[in-house]
Length: 124
Image 1 (cartoon, rainbow, N blue to C red):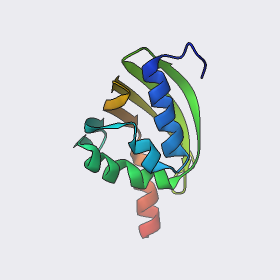
Image 2: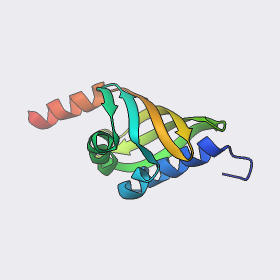
Image 3: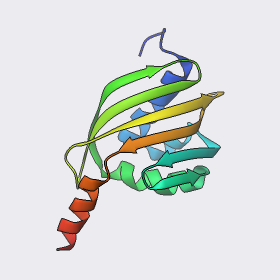
């Protein structure tokens, strides 16, 4: 990050660094109480529902790296690759809307199939 990094991108990167660094309480400080998250599992509304959705995933992360990060004063787009305990390579992308320093909307895109297959293997 540098001084020319946009406001939304600064917030998005701080959020990303917190959840990928296993400090989900800090990550939640960037989340609006009325957040709306559109994810492959469906729509999640409200900070507590978002915590219940994203918190457990963040604990599975063993490493993460940014592929691309773009933004302006209101929106940011992060593309990253995570390594998790069940899936060694799990790329994802997030489009985030930021209002007054709080993330009000996130659209998360990732492939659920490798996680489904890992759960099936673990169950057999």
